[in-house]
Each structure stands twice: as C-alpha cells, then as structure tokens.
Image (tube, rainbow, N blue to C red; front, side, top):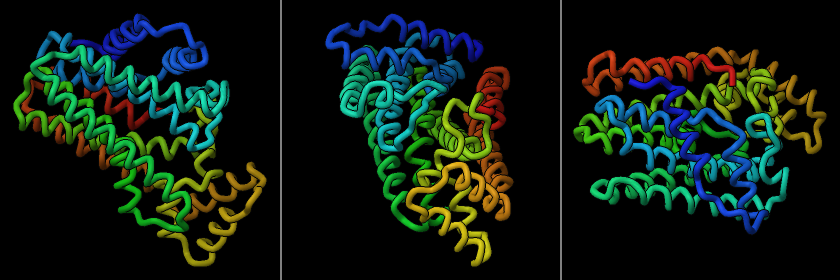
Length: 324
C-alpha cells in the first residue's frame, strides 16, 4: 500500500515531465505556473487510492489521475477569473499575474492537455473513461454556473446550495474515485460505492472550504480570508444564517451585503458576527462531519480488507480537520 505523499509524488513527477511548449510564452507559461505552485493533488491521489483498494499495481490509474488534476487546474484558472480572486495557493492568480484574456486561453489549452493525457489510458477502458470524464466535466460547469447565478439572487435554499456544491466540487472527487476503481477492474457495485464515497467526501471538503474562507488563517489557507463574504457568495454559512437569523438581524445582514462600495474589513467583521449569532459555524462543522461519516460508510461497503482502506480513511480524516 502507498502513502499519500508517495502517490502525490507520482502525480507531481508526471506533471513535471509534461512536454509543455515554450512558445507562445503567454499561452504556456501560465500553465507551467499554475501546475508549479503546488496544491494538495487530492483528486488524482484519490483516484490512485481507489485503484489501490483493489490492486497493488496502480500504473493503469496514473494517466486518468493526472488528467483529473490537469482538468481541475483548468477550472481553477477560469473560476478565479469569474470570482475576481487575487490569490490561489498563496500566489497571485493567473489572470492577476498576466491578464484575463491570457487566463481564459491558457485555461482552455490546459483543458485540452487534460483530454490528451486521458487518451494515454488503457485502451479497453478508454470509452468508459471518456464517458465518466465528460459527464463529470459538464457537471462541474453546471455547478459553477449555478454558483454565479446564486451570487445575483438575494436568497437561496439550503437544498439549492447543497446541489450546487455537489456539482461544482463533489462530483470531481466522486469521479476520481470512480475512475480509479474502474481501471482497477472493480465490480459495478464496488465502483458505485467508490463514487458515493468520493461524493460525500467532496461535500465535506467544500463545506470545510466555505468555513475556512471566513474563519481560516490566510497564511495557512492560501487565499484571501473573507473573499466569499465580499463577493456575497452563497456559502453554507450565508445560507444557514439567512434561514436562521431573526428578521431584524436578517435585514441587517442584507444591509451589509447591499453596500455598493463597502469598507471591506468592516463588512467581513460585521457579517462574520452575524454568522456567529446564527450558529452557522457550528452547523457547518456538524454538516461536514455528517458527510464525512457517510463517506466512510460507503468506503466500508466496497468490501475490501480494512488494511486496504486505511489510506483513504486517513486522508478523509485530514480533509475534515484541515486548516488549508
């Protein structure tokens, strides 16, 4: 069995060896930049871990796992543009360091690289891999569109929020585990439980991300703290507060959100205090833990020996207790 660091290094080793052209510099340098500033590599590592549940040899899972990471980084470039984000992994975002047009085009090129790398996967699994990859990629786009739609809506329900993060975040972790199980020749039932495990971990991961954006340490989190508040993004914290604040405090929340050019420090502090009044931070941690438990239940249903599950169990525990 492998450790997380060993699997991450396998992914990083392949990424370092990618033959990315030098010219045009403006197209390819941002790709090298986003891939070179780190990241947890959680999604590709989950694909390898899922394969490792069934086989000691995980070589067949490497091409699609790397493809998942390339696709994920493409979405980050474009998401940062849409979210007007200035930091990613504690570094300037691509569109901040270069410009928006370069960010769009470099992201497109990175997406093409993701599909090109996927084509090096096992030929007997390729059609199914492409199906999963396409379905997952489209769902991620649907989730991002819902995220942007909701920024312009005064209120959404918790049900709408959870569906949005299922699409935007969780399906990619679920797809990664599904792909890993598929290339390791798991049964259809095992593949389904692997997918469900990844889905629940993805939901927990995003709710934790929402929490850290408001309550995290910028030096650990790697992104600007309070960015979601400043953009009125519909996070678990905001949706929960809207549903649970008394009317007068809910109106105060809306007033803070409606200021056209707010004092950023004041807005973050005021809205965070309203989250506290609603009990939203505690509820976020509670909901995150519920998804974590469901994910571990799905992992057990896969039916492999406990010693083969331990690396995913350890990773899942770290995901829900992370600070960045």
